[in-house]
Image 1 (tube, rainbow over the protein chains, first blue to last red):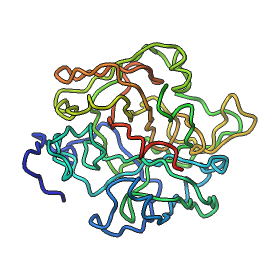
Image 2 (cartoon, chains in turn yellow, orange; image 1 turned 180 degrees about the vertical axis):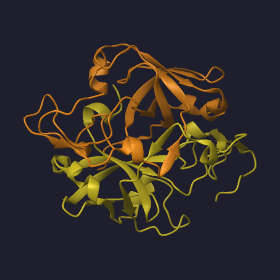
Image 3 (cartoon, rainbow over the protein chains, first blue to last red; image 1 turned 30 degrees about the vertical axis):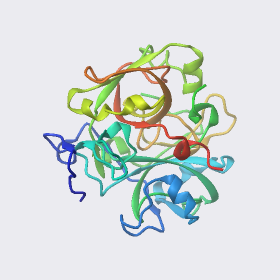
Length: 159
Length: 159
């Protein structure tokens, strides 16, 4: 568990204990070269610089959902940062002079710790439910929530 | 509820009833010009072409988390497609000759119906928890899960 740093502000309640507006199913896991949080790159850019591929494992009932994904070179992954606190609303990143609101940061610490990565698909094996990808910024075993095709007309910066 | 079309395949269970690997909190709502699913653009590109702005409402306990977001011109929204089925794994889009796996589509119908939009911020009012945005592709009242700053080195197409 992260400890709270000076200047950080926590909520008067912990969403990890109180949240129940909707419920998620884990559809697989991400196999990553990073075995601990200390070892894990802080973001996808840094992860990519380390040139270590990763593998997404999709569990059996969901594998038919991969059909057609071979037409896309890039995908968006949503995954659940299961080790992250959810109750810090103002955070003090190590690299910053001032604290920032949680929604102005890409930190895994957030009310709903859903992370987002745009990655390159190197190979897909639908029968075994595996996707080899170029890089990832989460620890080994992180639960997978969703896979989407990346579509430039939707996902590029508008304008 | 969507009905199942010819060639679509449903799971032998419904994640809407069985999912409980993690729990979400709704941190606000999206105020949108689209009042019904029939009226709602099918994706963000089409929504943007209609030139109708929208507004994100962040509920009171979370508003401090917006601090610092004014430094970003573009944000990523995650929201919960609360009217979508979760049990269709092979889908037949109207515009396609062949069915596609759910993970090869941006359809709201998916095991975890989390949608993703990259939008332009027109104005932020942190005290009132509102963000005016250029466009959105969900119906009025859609629950909000997360706001992230869009960061080119992370979110652009790799390479």
